[in-house]
Image (cartoon, rainbow, N blue to C red; front, side, top):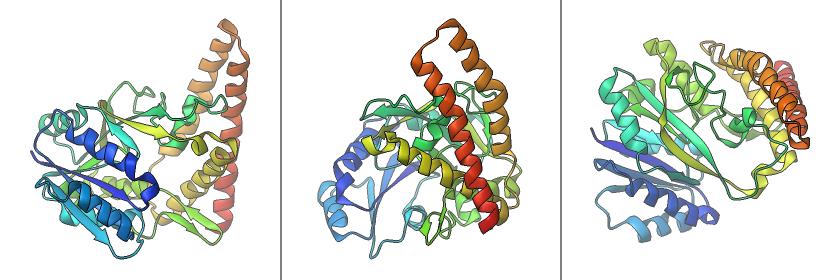
Length: 310
């Protein structure tokens, strides 16, 4: 089973991280793989990719003439891919050596249309006290309460995993038409996020099944300094709430994953943290419990703003 891995880049500022991401995939235990590297509107990036990887037969290079955004770039990567499975990851990750092997094993053992894995944090900066692990999804990391069992160590069907660690059978993705280019990024007073959610909502509507989550397929996501700043995290939380409302309007097929996660926060995560606070009290534990409610409230405010705008 051949796997095509699509990685996109739009700025030279991240080129060194991009190279590390590509090399981590090549260093993996799964051999039948090609890399589809997409430059999104930068001649410098396109030239650098060609200089570094242009002589490899297992690399396809795609260069957008202008900046088109992540959804379009991923779709162009899909068009160039030859694999039975198309996997997507980001330019700032380090793939575990067994990442692709773990994804492929699910396809071989189960009749599933899509498989995603777990994203773990690679802290470039110090881990922020203000960010409870239940909100790791704000920084593109799988929270400990993720999954059908509210436990990220347990696999099973979910609507979608996160964009840095997801894959599809190529035939399925082509039938769905790829990612929706109109979703993603700031436009005026709107900042709609969630290309992956929208795509997987269509997957569920078309196939009656979601993505299979396996915790064994691991990718480490680098968390840079700016992603640990409270202002950035609050802004991210607000627009995530806004996006959840927008996707409900744009994609009526969207299931109740967000409502279920809110229930998990209130009835699983909060009691667990309260018990921990009683047994091992600390200032950090108090701060994280407080921030659990703060981030939940900010996501809610974003959702209310979305109700006004949508």
